Length: 319
Image 1 (cartoon, rainbow, N blue to C red):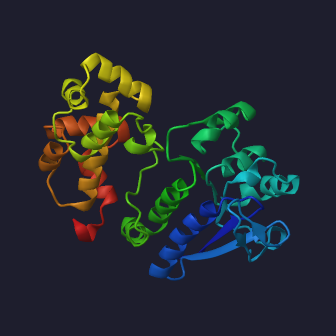
Image 2: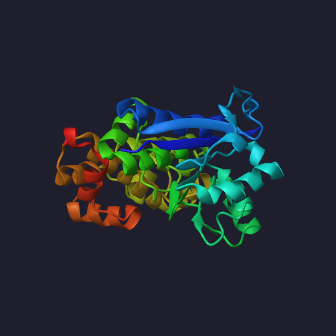
């Protein structure tokens, strides 16, 4: 198997996790399958850079002295707000030469600034999706997914999503078992498919201000198979169903039903990945009642059936 070179672009104001997260994934894969990846970092002049958190990163060399890599990874961070024109020029020239062009978080802003995302689908940190779409109308911005693949270009959402994308690329290169071995070593809670929304149910919804509603949120998470109807949840909060539904949406930004749907889906996914329980048992434990109801929820949200999801995201040795 030919060795793949990974070149990570560094610049002042880079987000450190955008760099170290994917690098740890590829380095972990290299440890398990020696000779598959050669990882290098480079800045414009080869000088150390200061990250947005104040850490100093020392590159392996200068971009001008770096041979064209198999995978070119462009991280994000505050430094993407006013990028050095020389960096955009380098990306414009060398980006198309990479067999695989990857961005993490607002690294997509740099790719778009270099004209590399025109006519492509892409994503970035949720807080910058509108800005990316407004400044670069030739780019089709998808604000929901964890990462987006369009041909040889892959863009990921905010910060930690670079780990999800890196794991997907390792799986593409070396197989599912290697990727999941790396994920477990890094204690990644759940390796998310690209079309999953950027937030889990708990992160996507705001934490309610009032204690009764916060308690209900926690109850839903801990009891996905329970009676989670609006009437039952309202009674637990000590409110009328109408008042509860209105207050829940006002304080969390989502309806009780959507919150419950997301919690149940996440619970089912964890069981499919981490247990040998059957689909019927998992459907009951996750509050779906029947395998068919769970299948419809998976197909609607993730585009795949539960059995196929398990096949893709559970290592063969654990099945």
